[in-house]
Structures are given as C-alpha cells and as structure tokens.
Image 1 (cartoon, rainbow, N blue to C red):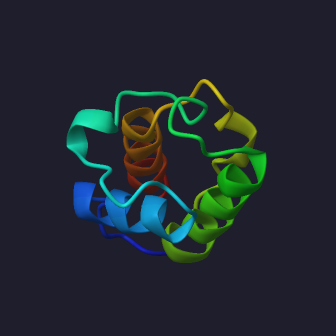
Image 2: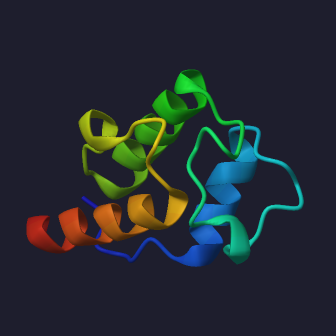
Length: 83
C-alpha cells in the first residue's frame, strides 16, 4: 500500500489520462465529473488507477456528482486511515 499523498499534480495527471480536457486546472476541480464530461467509464478507470497506486477503494463513493477535489480528499483520507 502506498503511503504517499495524492497531490493536485497527481490529480491533474490522472484526469488527463482518462480523457479530461487538456486545459483542466485547479479552478475546475470543484466541478462535478458530469460537468467535466467524464462519464462512468472514466470514473471506473480513475477508481482502478487509484486502487492500483494508492491501495484504496473509491469506486463505491465515486459518482457523477463527485468532484475531483472531493476525490483527492477522499483518497488522502482513506490512505491515512490505512497507514
């Protein structure tokens, strides 16, 4: 299990990897995944990559209304609880 923090840079890299607009930035992280045009397949890919890298399960809590910032907080909270 990884003990490193899920940073804003990690979040941006992950969002780009699953098809987010290349212009995405911190001002967008409070928008929902729906507003960012990231569908259920992209959210599943995000959850899988987070599970692989950080060792935490986020998929049950990740839905269309979730935001990238809430996801980052969730990953960091779960990782801290598991360390």
